[in-house]
Amino acid sequence: MDVFWCATFAADAPWGRILQCSNGHLLCSEAGPEGGESCSSQLRSSRQNNNCPVCRQTLPDDEIRALSAEQSIAALPAKCVYCSVDMTRGDMKRHVLACPLAPARCVAEGCRWTGLQEKRAAHEGTCVWGRGLLGFRCGDKGFGVKDLGFGV
Image (cartoon, rainbow, N blue to C red):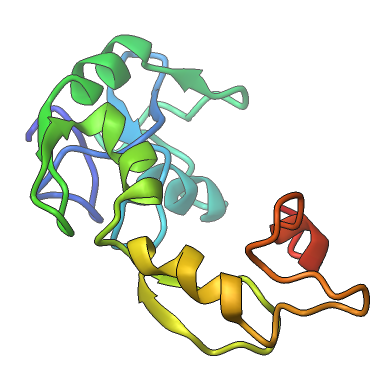
């Protein structure tokens, strides 16, 4: 996509928030599924070159979101890498969190179990690492990630 200047995702449209310079040139603002650093954060972190890579204008201090670009990209078709279900890019993040074939791990501190999301609840129901001082287990109703100190 030539409309985006992005060293990280040159072969694909950016994920999530998209920013623009004062002339409307687009920059990704969030790293995609592969991780790394977004174009916007790379440019803003280099104090010497805080300029738009297209028009060379200084990027504004207050970020300008490109909402129409975000909405257009969110409507593009996508396919889950775990279960191959078709959906839009905008639905992908929410789907992957609940996808039964996505990799998962036990929320109990000290437990090293990893497996599929669809098997996680069964594991946490029997996980000995999930037993707290009060006899709770990971899978018990009312006991969740917050109780384990993960702050989610």
